[in-house]
Length: 210
Image (cartoon, rainbow, N blue to C red; front, side, top):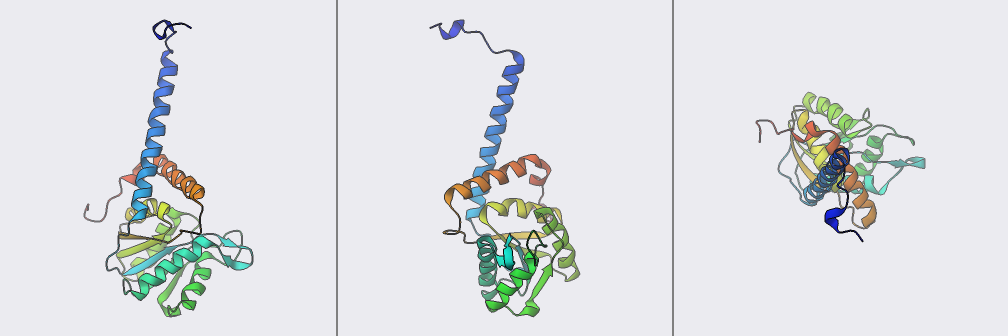
């Protein structure tokens, strides 16, 4: 075996590639750690509205586990008096009706008046959730919101809503028992990649720079 000192040194291009791979890997897993830690904590105060982000609707209009968990968390916050109304955000996917309509059915069944539920049915992404929701929120004079979603989704969601000029608190849906640990790890890393690919999103600040 040749001594390490005598082994050929990697070329400049290869060293640059290894460096980039290291930086990318470190960045992804560093962001994944941040995504996970952020999503484990509740950041809730009094708000003008609760914004519930949609999730998949199954065939026959059956809500997915993630959708149920998000609505359950928002309903609990509503009954605690955190905000006087819910904005349910999510358009129609592969299986109608829209995510927003399915969420309204769940919320009303859990004791939220239909008059306290506002639907946003145009969005099909987190950025769309923020953009279309912000328009409805401003029409109703709401500036301070609590966004409800799965824990791993909350950091990116907060940043998207901040870019729309809103003051945002977050509350994680209780997904324990509805999602396997491996699936949660996958989605957490996926969120880290999404943030890494949109670095300007990470620079979004609350109104007033807080």
